[in-house]
Length: 107
Image 1 (cartoon, rainbow, N blue to C red):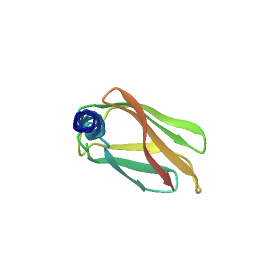
Image 2: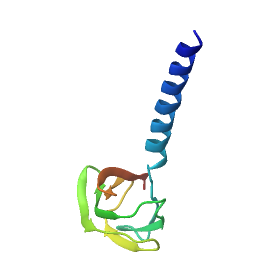
Image 3: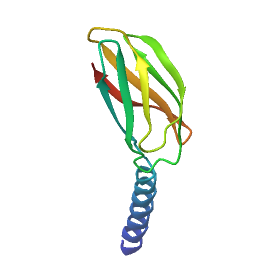
């Protein structure tokens, strides 16, 4: 009975450590977006959030890709023409080689 308890405890510890290690490696950059005028927005990388690379970024506004090909370092600002009026804006980037939506905003 004690041996079974030890084996189960080792399994739980190894599984928990493995999951914690995987979750700890996830990095999420922090971006801000602001409307500069009636047709343009400025997107700024505020913090890399532990990411080593933020590349191949593209902006979708109202289901249309309006800007693409960006890479970011902390403090980098990019301007994008999105059109006037409110709409959903998505910023998608390859973060450390994994494609992600890193910003979703109603502007």
